[in-house]
Image 1 (cartoon, rainbow, N blue to C red):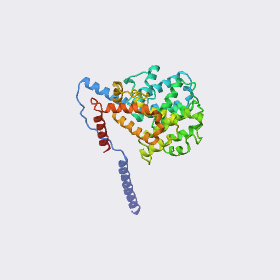
Image 2: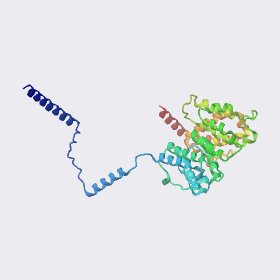
Image 3: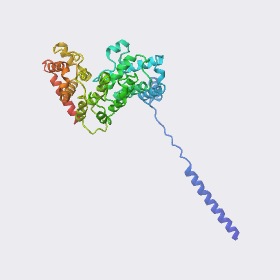
Length: 381
């Protein structure tokens, strides 16, 4: 009987254990999704066809890496084998024309307030394609990324003498030195040094330090251009001073500096004080850069006559840009003074043209300037 009772208890425990295991298995099993009836939108054959095409378009549309990043990655791949585009090969000719095309059609219009990297007469001589159909909807940040990628390819080359359009590329790299973007300045300088000029190459390290926002103050202290100190050889000054001027002028007009503790006025005073070490005849490049917006007005001439063409040229310059020019000119005269005596006729001709255009009764330029100031104040608030 005892044995029979024990067997009955074991059978009950076995049944209980089996029931518990079955419940656990049920809990682990995934739930079957509940299907629901969905009412499809009714429409004709044309409407259903349009919806199908739209679904296919969305499914095939590329929503990953942007076109700018793809182009930058391709340029980095070209940089690894930059010698292939260094000579006058089909690849080299295609790359150079792509660079010039990009600068003329895409980059320069976005930075209209700066000097053109490729001037209009050069665009006409090269027969570069023009037109809005060639433009990408890029902003300044995207265009600068592409330009940096192209300059990195140039900087990785071993020489520029055999490159297609080498003379024009030399001018382009020289003009880009005045850009406020530090990386564009450094890469343009490295590409410029590949021509092997004995007046620039020995000072490459000092010039690159002047491009950096966190190093240029120390570089100004150690790299003096005063002829009495003898840091720069006299035979090098003719070619070196214009390069140095363009690099430092970018610091004068630069508005935003990451991590800079000093204000804009202090930075301008520091850089302009460095220019005081130049000789009076060496200020031609600096004055030409400052007067570049008024080239059509007569910035390259010394005439003091103000006529209809002069008024039209000044009216074409934006009022905000006029104010920027006057502020820069004020700082120049305050810091350099008599050193600009040789260039007074050119500066005075521009000032007379501005005064004539501002006070001309039919222009109403004063009201435009006041409106620009009010808009800037509202944006700042």
